Each structure stands twice: as structure tokens, then as C-alpha cells.
Length: 283
Image (tube, rainbow, N blue to C red):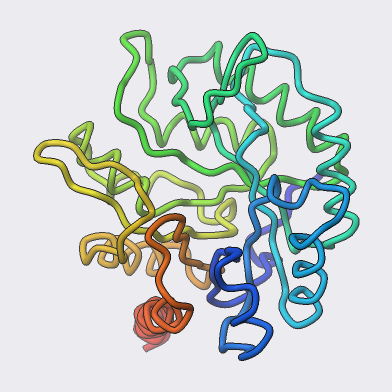
């Protein structure tokens, strides 16, 4: 599977995560949102309201699919039933792309319902690369892998997080969903420079950006997705736009979900920051 070059990277604009709380508002108002991201697992069902609203909304907006259950870093065998269901949903939705997380989510058939970090070792790189290649072959598309927030580190790690992400993406020939909030959260928790992280990630691999809020607890930040985007994350996003150029960006909100209008206002700030940075590049 050949690499898609940076010049071929599609730009969808500025989007939101589609949440059930906003289904009717989206259809009634057709808001000024360029695209929506769906959580794949919410629609791996036979029928019912999720698919009913999904089909109606995707008639008006481009979509991408974002998974939370692939567990690409697990030592468990890949779940072929899950992958076949995911491929069926991709065929139905025809998303611009699909993504999941560079993590593991469980072992011995137990789903921890969390995104657990990996040790940054050559052994882990080889393991993940082989699994990503198998997923891409089965789905028939390149996938995007997202960096996760983390709160622990492994003594055996041989690389930095950004070196690990870069090596996996390049060796597996996959793409990257860069979560700016996760970079900020992990940089604070592990005391590294988030801007050095941005500089280390290959421009041509970054196809999507996530932005979200977090919760600060003294000497720890938790990626909660239940607050507005913090100003330091916006500043890091501005630096990301200066480095990567025009990349599709969106807001994730998963708890304490406000009215759709509030998220659209926040998205306007995302758009404004990006477009000002891009104008600065041209000037």
C-alpha cells in the first residue's frame, strides 16, 4: 500500500464530534460545521436510532470514523469479527478516513474501556507495525493512529513518545491523527516539551487534528473532554498549524456536553486561529 503524499492530503475544514445529544439540532439547524467525526462503536449495530440519524446527517455533511476498540497494541489476537463489522460500517458511511488509537485496551478478553499506553521499545514498534499492516490490508485503506494521553511511563522505554509514534507510522505506512490536547496533557504529566513533539512528527503523515478540554488536578492533568479547550492548547494548536499547514481539525466533547451553539462558537475560534496562522505563512 503506497504512502499518500502531503500534497494529496484532503482538507475537510473544521468539524465536531457527532454526539447523540445534538442529533436533532444538527438536522433542524444544519449548522455551519464543515464535517463530523463519529465514534465507530456507536454505530456497529443492526439498526435503530443511531443508524437512523447517522444516515440522515451524513446526507448533509462529510464524515470520518474514529474507533476506540481496535486495541492495536494488545498481545491478544486482532478481533476479526470487529474488523469485519468496522469494514461494513466503512462501506456504509464512506468516510474520508478512519482512525483509532496507538494503545491497548485490554487482555484475556477483558475490555478495560480505557486507552492504555505502550512501552516505547523496538519490540513494541515491530508488534504494532505488523498489526497495523494487517488491519490496513483487511480494510483496504490506510488508517490514522492517534497519540493518547498518558499518566504512567515504562522503565523499559527506549524512545520518546514522539519517536515511537513516528517510527510506527513510517514503518507501517499509516497516517496520524494528532491530538493536540493529548500532547499538552502528556507533556505536563511527564515534563517534556510539547513543541519539540510537534517538530518531530512528519508533516506528510498528519491528516487530522483533535482538540479537547481537560481537567487540572494539582500536579496532574487528566484528558476528560468535559471542558472547553484551554488557552495553552490553543497556543499549541497555532504552532501545529504553522508546522503542518492546512489540516482538518475538530473538537471532541464527551461529557458535560453543552448546547450545539456553544460548540459552534468554540469551533469558530479554532477556525480563526488556523486561518490567521495560514495567512501568516503566505505573507
